[in-house]
Length: 290
Image (tube, rainbow, N blue to C red):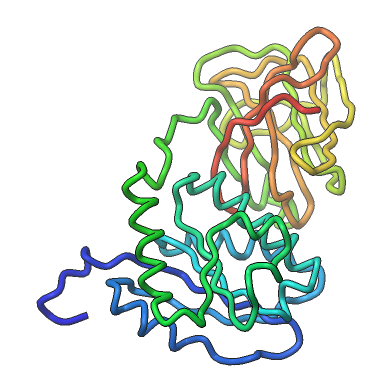
């Protein structure tokens, strides 16, 4: 970029190259070729670790600086690993949810052809790095997405007010999630969390990080599915309002997501819930649990 060129003319891209056992090569040179098409690219190479939530790591990186697009390098070493392709598609799904369906995402194929890709990746935009004009193809896809509509969805005000309380009630090992309404009164309410997590305490209390009441009326609980995740739902009939909150408290690590909303009917099943992502502090609408 020269002194006469405004930074606003350039779009920020993130290039990710995850590798399994050893790096096949250094793809940092791609940033220079993208500069010819008015892109400022940041390149990251990192090893895929066992049991790592790669999808979460990718989304955190995309949101950390506010990139305008994402390019992911696809090699034979990666696409033949089922665990990687599953994490990659999960990251793509989460990126669409958080950054919108028009957010540009492109696979850069190195040493492989389209027919080598798993079916789920073939339907997404992919470009061969063997194409001498690959950077122009990226620009074409980027401009097409940009001209088709806004990249980010219009942000709606969340239905509920969420707050994270670290060192809850003076205990450094506890973290509480507080949620209250913006004015409506909810008599029967429900939380839903991944089934692998277990709350230390939960219930209702005054808003502002106050003590959780030990009294719970009309307790209800059960299990269900949110997308592909098994969840445990639970709740009570102590009123939640703008001044009275629902709390759920955890020891150590927080769940990836927490759902909250009113019960669907008298049998206690959750209705339409709002999803809170503690790691991203984002709220999304969710359909009733299945």
